[in-house]
Length: 219
Image (cartoon, rainbow, N blue to C red):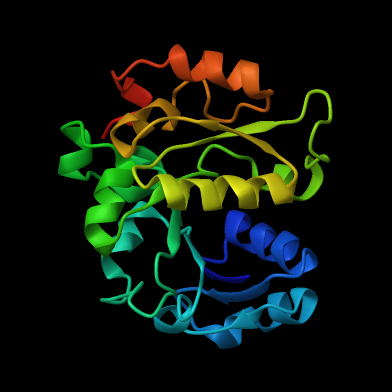
């Protein structure tokens, strides 16, 4: 499968490592240009490209950049993707730590809904509360006892299933976390954020989430 990754930080880099190892055709981009990704490309076999090219022909596009950088992504970022492409948003709003104040999110808009509006394409929220190292080291075969589960939220049922299937291939179970308007349940500061439990534990954590953002996670 052709997969484009926009953002080559910890999550993007480790997804490139695992997905190429599974035989997927991966293109990866960052904000500094493909020449800065030569070492990762050599290590993984992924193709380093400009951000405007990363989604070209891709069945899955992963957007894994700081929220403050989302408005600066190329216009029409997803236009060249395959028909019906699933777009994964791994982002989190860190107003104090990194992103500054984003008024719409402070007023209650789910982070991924805001990202969706910026890029002009529906997104599936996944991997946002996953430790990058887990992607490399915690995957287990399907049916393994205690297999780690990841929450997945989004409005497009078909795209969500594509993402869940990919996560299963990476070695993790998934929990349907509802539509994108419910994705606040997996934002920073919620019980499921950083959770490494199985399906039952993740379902319980999602149910225990509060929509009230704590002071630590507000501007």
